[in-house]
Length: 358
Ligand SMILES: Nc1ncnc2c1ncn2[C@@H]1O[C@H](COP(=O)(O)OP(=O)(O)OP(=O)(O)O)[C@@H](O)[C@H]1O
Ligand SMILES: [Mg+2]
Image (cartoon, rainbow, N blue to C red):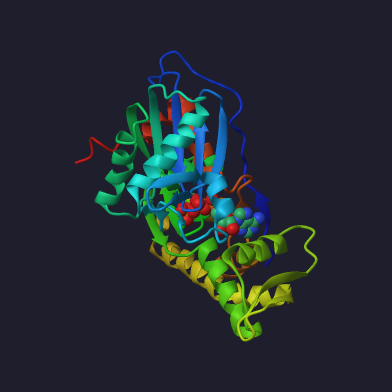
């Protein structure tokens, strides 16, 4: 049987501004997807989505010296007095102080230095505890960013909107978001979430698998950034099939060069891809049969930066037997969905107040 692979519809980019009079959100609003690797911010005033690395560089344990992409630049290269870390871990807030500092800086930069009152729409994974969910609200409330109101939107719902799924009417949509620390597999129906599972795998686990395989096979130590560049370059349309890498020989301690093949990288990642495909199967087995028709007709919606792995796409095609719809902008899909909740009154009911939750 042949499986089609289609590009997901994205009929609605972030450009045109649309603000009907009866819509309760006022001019200044932001949609925020706090990813482990990338923070994505939709600024309603500019209509643009900005992506920055979700990282902070702190010197002598107290002074923030860089955040976002500039902190990432220093990662794996800085002296021991500078600590580079990620404030989000496995999809939840690990360091609230650092996360607040990063968010405040990014929002300040977005508003050219002065923070104005704004509504905030935050995407939250479904499969987290109540305490972790509330932490997203508290984060914004206490970050000193002049939050007027704070809304939560389930991450999978925002993904669905960003992927062009008719979230409110579809009776069954399978969404798979493969990020950095997490992979979220969800079934949506009629504007809600029927099932959702967050598993601890994604780009980070893929990079670790490559670091370990290179060490085992070639006695070569490489950094996570090198591992990531190997992976990503091999997904390029124009991949050469091999990649020359540099690292430190474990035995001699000296810098060394090696050439890796695509097959080697594929083998290193196979187990991670198997786990994700297995997880999708488990979710499908638990899905009420009434939702099967739409899922079968529409196929699987794949997004998240690491969802672009070619080996993963083939594995899902083989094991799940559904068409794969790949997001056009896998890193920004959630933020694109949040932009629609902010701009379009008919999607407004998909946001809820985290504060008011029982
Ligand atoms: N072309 C590509 N091929 C494969 N992987 C890619 C590509 N581009 C980006 N990635 C990977 O995407 C990952 C980041 O994706 P994304 O921004 O969706 O994660 P995140 O939202 O920060 O993480 P999480 O959702 O787990 O909190 C990184 O691991 C990066 O290596
Ligand atoms: Mg993400």
